[in-house]
Image (cartoon, rainbow over all chains, first blue to last red; front, side, top):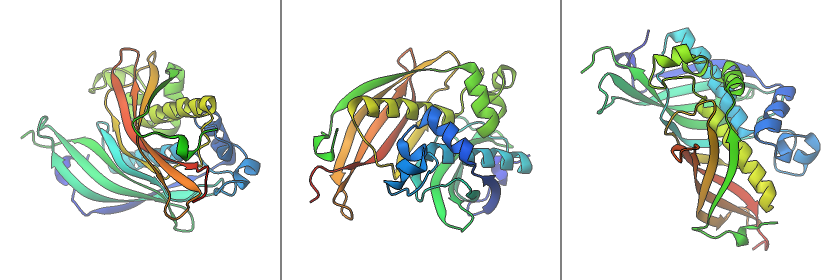
Length: 149
Length: 149
């Protein structure tokens, strides 16, 4: 298991493999983001998306699926997250794309109010199969400390 | 239809009504955020969540559903979003909660590179049925301008 004390600022990782399925893009959009460019190629053709594109919140959710699988692989037990900063949807995500993640730890600190807990902030970039960055954000996650003080 | 020129900085709105369903919380978490506190009351009881809580990305997605329904009601045709800032999950969202939104326009400007387009930034707060803020973020959305220059 990984503790706050094991986290190094500047450390980088690559992980994840998520194939974006057309049916899933449409099902997500119908329920949570039914804007025309997330529902049909025809409507998307009239916009800068060009063709059916995933909701940005769907891309964030697919990314979270990759993150949680990676947590499991490396023994990182998150206590939850206070939030994320600078979430940017940089390029459309299309059905058929394969997504993966790159992270760099930018800050790791003990919580002042809860010294048994630490806060780790990373810069996370999601890329498609061509290496193009499609989304980027700065998540902060809570993690246990090995020593309480 | 609403254009950039119709948007006033400081304008506020309240909208939305989303009942958080237990089955939906679990289904979302299974696919996109299978951390224990999003899957069962028993696992959540051992954490600060206390009981089964929605994934933060699920809360963001439910919020987007409220936003898109509101866009339709008021004739706001978004061209998409470059991103959001300062996304904060302030309190757990539980099955049985009813969510609603408050927004305030904080900036509205013409795009320098694409003068036929504007960018509107808001501060959006999601509250539960007790009026408690559960999530807050600053979305920026693209919208057409009435006059191109």
